Image (cartoon, rainbow, N blue to C red; front, side):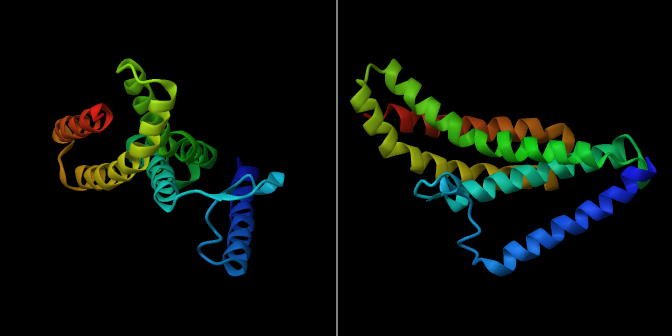
Length: 179
């Protein structure tokens, strides 16, 4: 355990040095993740809204784990499992924050197929509606969830999400079934 406690500050210092090097050597726009650049392909910047959603999801997952370990499990600073927090953050970054784009794409594709659109018509509809639905998602859900966690008592949070989900599902139904 003592070895782990000594290793965590050293790893944190190395991470901070890497962050400062990256931060000082690139502009904010260049800091956006670029897909394919490492493989010699043309880099495609990830939309800023998606990147911020991924970062928020990861940070919230990490914060949730810290709260669980410190307030619920009462581990204290010496008993805190840093690797567990990092794993939860990774899940937030890689899965939770990336789920809305995957869900919306699949939802629009499935709705188009169920509505009898040809592959070409379905693809055109997805191209027409996807970005608008994704941006609307990011305009609605992060503020709702932030307000929900900060201002709504625990007993009523699910009801808030369900009420907003009705509005959101109404929007999705309208968007996906507009022909």
